Every structure is written in structure tokens, then in C-alpha cells.
Length: 205
Image (tube, rainbow, N blue to C red; front, side, top):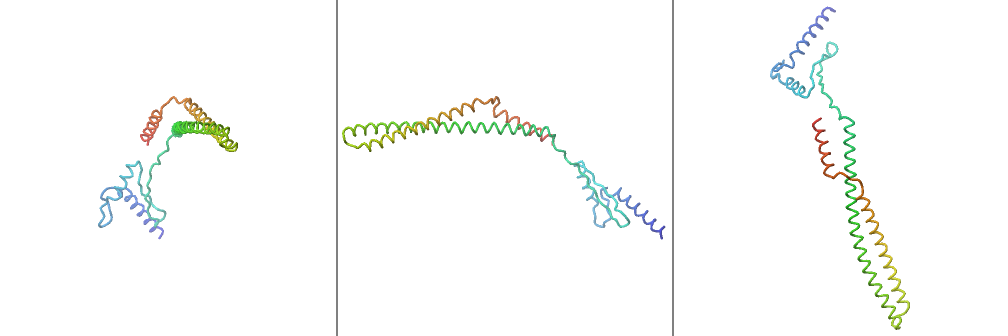
């Protein structure tokens, strides 16, 4: 009985060895309506991806068989290159932020300058009204209370003018400081570097 089992085992192993050699050959099949091309095509596709397809035997008489697919794992880019790329993006982002700050500060200067003009005009009107009121008060046409209100309005308008002038001076100073930053490169330079980095990365992949 033991001899018969050993003989059967050897026969199965021999059949498996023959199957392992032929199973990936085109047109090899043990099915009545099979074409014998399925595994051959699979092997070719996997080999085109630098991989391999193999058949292995299971354990024991009824262990069956296993197909093993091996494919290479694409290695990540060099860490130093990634750090350089991240650094370039950080510099480009900082440059864009500075550009945006310059634009925003310039717009603030325009608004502040317009506010100064309006406040100056308001002060001129309130000053005229105050002086006119003082003359009318001397002539007895209006009371001291009315003149006091006009004087208070004039003082308030002058304060608003001072505030707007201070804001304008502050924005001008901010713009001057932004324009003095050591930006020796242009946005086009950074864009060229970024595109070059992306092109090199795609070639490595």
C-alpha cells in the first residue's frame, strides 16, 4: 500500500513538472474548448511590466496548485530631490505671497489717499462753517452753543484727517519695506525652475 502511494506521488509530481513546463506555452490546454492562449497572454503582459508569473505545487496529494505573480515596486524619488522640490515650492509660494502683499498694500494706499482728499475737503467745509458761525455769533444771529457745535465738528473732522494721513503714511512705509526685499529673481525664473523639476521627475518615473 505504501509502495502504491509512493508511486502515485511520483506520478503526480512528474505530471506537475510537465504541466509546469508547458502551461505557459501558446495553444497548450487540457480543455475541450480551450484556446491555450490565456496564460500565455497573462505571462506576456506581466513580463512587459518587468514581472514574472509562475506555477507552484501545493502541499500533499490534494494540495492543488498556485499561480504566483511577481511585480517590481517602483521606488520613490530620492529624498534629497524631494526636499529640493519642496524648497522650491516654498520659495515660490513666499514670492507669490509677497507679490500679493505688495498689490494689497498699493490698493490700501489708493484708498487711504482718497480718504485723505475727502477728509481735507470736509475740514475745509467745516472750517468755513465754523468761521461763518463765529461771525454770526458776533452779530448776535446765533448763540454760543451753536458756535460750540460747529467748533466741535471742525475738531472732529481735523482728527479724522489726521487719522487718514497717518494710515496713508503707514501703508507707504509698508510698501517701501516690501519693495526693498532682496528679490533678485523674477516670477518667470521660479516658474522655469518648477517646470524643469516636474519634467525631470516625469523622466525618472
